[in-house]
Length: 186
Image (tube, rainbow, N blue to C red; front, side, top):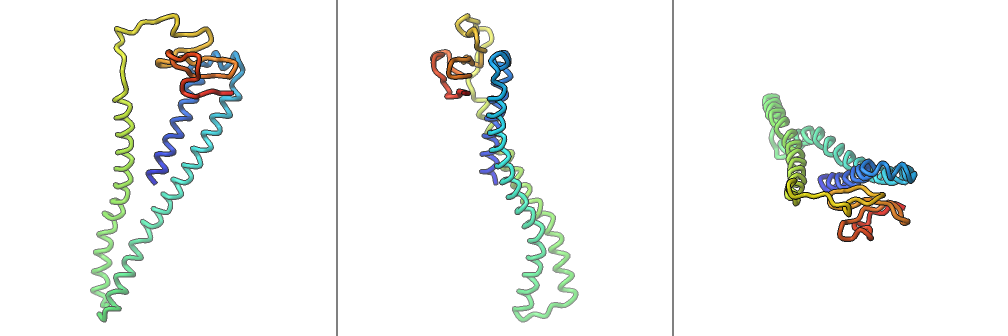
């Protein structure tokens, strides 16, 4: 389930990145009538995201079904094993065992939820750690250079988003003539 969640988070990041690029270059998008292309890209990524979300929820529903069925199956199995080993199941033994099973049901059910939450927290901490380790710039040493912003582009964290005959692209300062990240919208 965590692998599906990781895949879904990556796809969600792609969708957010596309929307962010569109909003940062909204003038270019509007002037060149690229809204339809952005909508198509966002819709495609969103469909992949929803497919992964469906898979994740399917797995989660199976986990929940097993979580609620397992105490009953465990009780029935314990009673069957007790009787099949030649013991006589008395009322006192049955109610004592049921009381113990019910006492253990709560910790067992919440242990599985705890494992899921710990896995989510671990993945969140990993993503935050990656973000925090990114290179930062000192605000006092940053200078604005006319070469940083093209006539039809928008500054984008060290790169330039612009429009060429190939479509909307996101390039780097070092390689403004290329698409840099390969993000070209036709």
